[in-house]
Length: 355
Image 1 (cartoon, rainbow, N blue to C red):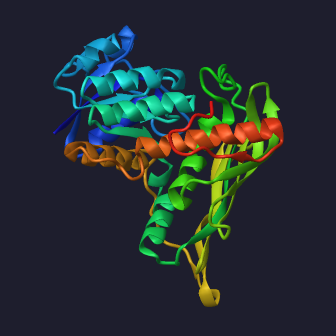
Image 2 (image 1 turned 120 degrees about the vertical axis):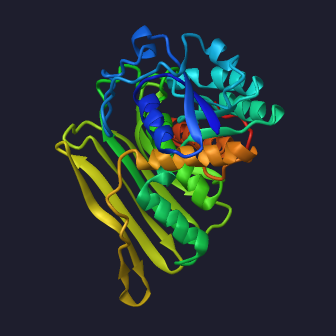
């Protein structure tokens, strides 16, 4: 049994708690929050943009800590699940790894590449696993594409275009603060940067055209260049001022034998699948797999199952590993530099510093 301690009981802490409740071989054994109300189990004021609202939870069987140091000192905990604000990821993750815990940290991994590298180095130095909550590959459409590519159903990847655009999140006071949340690239586009890194490897150069909002990119288009000139990869990311479309994401991925398309949006508070996952294959074949209806928590269940499976045998995760998440943050900072300077920016080798 993998025993988990969740640090930070907000929206993501609640979703992770629900996922562990459905995950065989894991149990939430401890929580850590400064809120006495939440320590007592009153999570009813938790509300997010998907999934069920918070509830009254029975915490009587849980170890309840107000200080992270006390959670880390609990020798019965195998995995520390960090659902803290982005600017508080790096130091607690390093401390947990140094206490011999595996760490599952929500994305973005950290706000700077140096902080990400410190986390990766701490995992290696302490022979523990570092998992970063890049849940996007666990969503049904993205998971299916990964399966197709891994088993060669439609040949090998040749590139693609990726979209992740939201309306201005006016309720998040620190969203554009590079020291606390990181802005649209670090907080939003990092999902697609991670997916691009997973599908195609690490780019050698980025060329981004966009708009800045003070120190962060507000909106941009990016061309990712690779050592293989046959790979053609593009992404559009950021914020628009039209509040009637609070969210959209999707892709058009090209392989040697098919074009794979998907697009989803929330328009006027109604979720719409604009293009269900579709494979445009050879000889005019059009294939649309049945992905089922699913549940909002299901991708997070798949995520915590991956964490539990890898932690149980102390092996890295191919999808949730720290190296991959660090590289995604590297790409975001390279894109910011390209928008800021109006020039192509070379991507540093893994472990190099950009910000």
